[in-house]
Structure formats: structure tokens, C-alpha cells
Image (cartoon, rainbow, N blue to C red; front, side):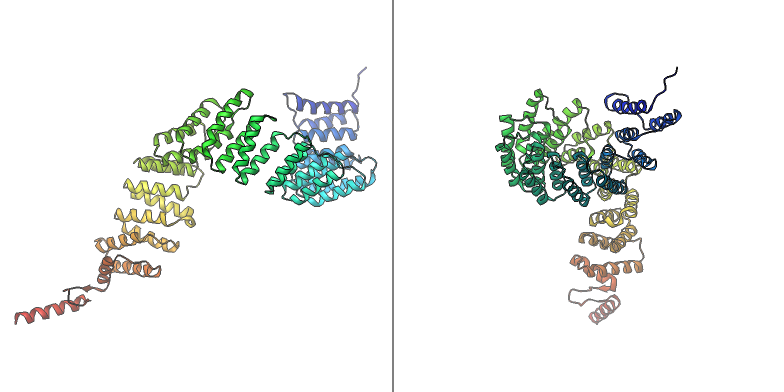
Length: 563
């Protein structure tokens, strides 16, 4: 005869799926869940509370919070009462995505409150701890306090775990006074803090910049013979760094490395490297790095953060040989890659030190690793090409950047403008500037306008120079005085602009300069006034007159001399 499965068979099968997913290489898909229910129906069986609990557990394990929620609603619709396990699993699942499931959590909390009233004899600490933890994730401290009231009302004792969750929650949310009150309550109720709880309260104090209190708590741990782990020491180390107290940071570092009561890990070493950068102690960077290399034999290996922190400090102190050595070492020996920001820092430092070949080497490695250059990268490279006279490379780089979805900003475009002008490609300079103004008008500053206007003047493009001066006025940007001097001087000597237009243009410039309190060179200002008003200086003793009157006076004086 055929042996038919019963509901226990299916419940066991679903539990097996959870184990397979957690412990085996083969992963389970959410698609299997509807098929399980189809099979249950095919054998005319009814899913029970254990079925739904195991399915909800499987959904949460697979990241299917929505599917788990649908199972929970299905339980309700079929009149199957959720139990402690149902609620605990769902509460933990909802913790993972608080920005999506606020309404679900509100509904679930109300359901749990109803359950608490009906089942006072079945309650345990696990459900309440889960509720507190999830309410904290949602930053819903009303629910935290409500849950604590429910625990007290039902005689549920606060354990180390409960106190730890509360101390961590209040500490991480800037509620240090509440965290300290909870910690003291813990001691009053004779619940001995363990290293995890101490770690949470020390972390809370460091976040609140209560560094002396954090140090006092560590001493208290030592007095109670509770061994502090490396996480606690690292937290304190970071606190001393924020305090800019390098002496304490270094003292703690030496204690750990020399006494070895607790084994340092790479996170601890990275923290002391960062302390050196923050506290301006770069001379010790390589000392610590060499210690890490010694630790390498104890399976403490430098990671990408180690190298990044080292290189940042070495770049700031211009130890560029060490930077290049470390970069090559990472590139050659590890699969981890530096990000675009660190590449930019290295390249910027190399360009500033005029190590152009090294900068190009770093950019080539960056490309090999498939790291997309940003506007900052392009700006650094353009500066390099401009300094080395490779103007066309800078322009080609601009064209390459234009083909990417990223917007080319002011710094990069200004560098390209300079390359265009220096290579006498004024049409390209005009194209770059006008494109920049169209996309980033509000960001244009004096440097950009000085560059394009002076470039146009130099190239004899006075009409464009005048247009851009007008745009600068519209954009409320005042150019450098020497740019206005150059513009007026070239206007006066121009043979391509008619006299009337020239006068109007010059008058406009003078009126604007008066409004912003900028003066032309004295000699140029005299020339400009004479040009505008047709004035002439016939003789050093003659007053300045209109040109027609000056000429008439000159003729009369000449006639008298003949007589």
C-alpha cells in the first residue's frame, strides 16, 4: 500500500530546507514555498501553527520578509493563533528593513500586546528582547518604554541581554544619560555586567565624548576581573583619537602590544594608524606598519584600510617614495583594490611634487583595475598635462569625460580652458566655457571668467570677451582689475569695431567699474576719457578741451605767430 505523507512530514521537510540553506552550499529559493503549500493541499492536509511557523522562519532566513508577512496574515485568515515563536521570528525579521515596514511593525506590535494580555503565563524574555531590539531599529522609543512596562507588569526579569540591548540602544542614539541610568539599575538589581555590556556602555561614553568616564569603566572592569576584549580597547583608542590625546592612545597601544593580555587585531592596528594621522604624528606610521608585518606571522595581516590609512598619512607628509612602494606592494600582492578617492589623493600629491611619470603610472593602474575616474581625477590629470605642455591630452580627456554620464564641473573645465588657451584653440575654449555655463552657471567664479575673458582678448576675440564680461555682470562675478585694463586697452586699439560701438562699449565698462569701485590704470583712464569725449592735449600748458575746440585754438595761435 502507498504510504502518504502527513502534516508532520511537511513540517519536518520545511525545517530541513532551513538547515540546507544555512549549512550547505546549495541555496534554497523562495519559489519552493508555494509548491509546498500546493503539495499539502494535494494530499488534503491542513497546515497547522507549526507549518506556518517553520515557513515564516524559512522566509525570514531567505530574506523574504514580504512572504513571511503574507504567511502571518494567512494564519490570521485561517483562524490559526500565532504563538511566541511566530512573533519572535517576525519581529526579528522586520528589524532588518525599518524604512519599509513601519506600518507592519505597528500592526504586529498591537497583535503582540493582545497576545500578552491573553497569555500571561506563556511569556518569556526572548520575545521582549526582540521587541526592544526592533523598536530601537525603528527609533521608536515609545515602544521601547511600553515593552519595558509589559516586562515589569508580567514579572519578566531583565537579563544581561536585556540590559545590553538597552545600553547599546540609548548609547548609539545619543541618549547617554539614559544609558548610564540603565547600567546603574543593572548593578542595583545584582545583574553582573559582562564584557559585552561593558563594551556597550564604554562605546556609549566614547560616542558622547565622555572619555574619562570610559577610562573609569575600563578600570572598573579590571577591578572586577572581567577581561576586556580587543573591541573595547579599540573603542577607547578611537575615543582618545577624537580627543586628540595621542599620549593616551600611544600608551594604550604599547600596553596591548607589549603585555599581550589580549591579542591585537588588524582593526586595532588600523585605529592607531588613524590616531597618528588625526594627531599629526606621521613619523610613527612606518613603525606601526613594521609591527604589523611582525604580527603577520600570528595571522594578523594588513588589509586595504591599513594601506589606505598609511598612504593618506604618508601623502600628507610628502613621503612619496614610501607611498609608491606601498602602492606597488598592494597592487602586486593583494586582490583588494584602492578606491577612486585614494588614487586621487596619491595622484594629487605626485603632481604637486612634480612627479608626473609616477602620477601617470598610478592612473594606468587605476584603469587596469576598472576604477572609473571622477571629475577630481580628470582635474588632476588635466593639471598634469597642462604643467607638462601636453595640452591636447587635456582636451582629449575633456572629450572623453563628455561621453560619460557624469557632469564635468568647474575645476576640471577651468583646467581644460587653460589648456585650450595655451594651445591657441580658442574655439574649443569657447565651446568648453559655454557648455560649462549652461550646466553649472551658479558655480562659475572669478577664476573661470578671468580665464576665458583673458583668453579671448589674447586671441583677438574681443566680441566674445565683451559678451562674457556681460555674462559675468549677470552672474554677479567681478573680474580681476587687470582683465578690465587689458579689455579696455585692446578695445581702444581695435580696428574691427566701429567707433560708435567702441565708445558705447568703453562707456559701459567704465560705468560698471565705477559701480564696483575698480579703477583703470591712470594713463589708460586718461586715454579712455579722451577717446570717449574727443578730447585732445595740444600742448602741455593747454587745458584739456574737446577736439574741435582744441584744433581751433591751435590754428588761431599759429596765425598770430605769423603776424
